[in-house]
Image (cartoon, rainbow, N blue to C red; front, side, top):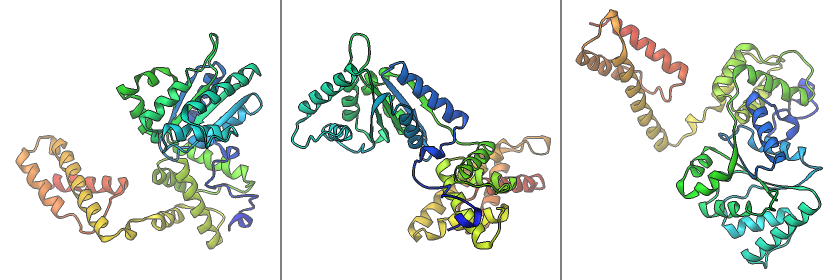
Length: 348
């Protein structure tokens, strides 16, 4: 919609994990180097863990591209499955039809294939994405696959990638043998404001953008805060911001436009009444608890207020909070707490 307006060859903020658009933040670069080194040195089991939207899949595609000419790779992402289904998905990735094979037969065939690749001097890499969804029994099946080896080397390198729930599963005592085999563990972290700026610039450049700075510094700061530095959220936000800018005929996206996009993306008004009431009730309780704890820690007028006075002040102030405020943003919450503190300093 806005490609011609901004002079772009293609969509810079798409939803597919295209390795060309991969931005290597320090955390992404370190994770990629760790995975590459682990595979090169035949460590066997590797793990990559990050919150949703951090770019795990894009990073994995980039990693597999690096080994395209030197290794046989298989990418498995159907992880809500049984052990037999997992083996079928894996064999299908390798081009084998296994509909009439039982689990033991698939296991044997897979072992034969590994030996064949090893004799040809090629590494074999299996990447399992969204591994947090795997049942413990399937994770145990994957562990057994790693037992395929010669006296001198592992025949198979396995990368488990998933959300933090994967770390919870690996920490389970029942999966101690699997955890012991994970020799390298990598993680991805949200982008800072500076990294968010570089991330946006990188994607725009890949898409062919050659204009001036598209976002003001104030806009970038707000985008980082709102998206929490998560690449997928940044992509979605920038798509909407550029669409709005195109509609308004503006080549620079400022704070006012960013705030308008934030309003447009607010899902709160679309909640059902039941969910709205539940959200408000829980949010109000949490806010009041947080305020109460803040009040109890305040050292007002250079002396400690008696606890009963603070209790009374907290009750009065929280009851006086404007109705229908909904969910407070971090900025609004801080402003409200500052208002509470100022009010208490004048209260006797």
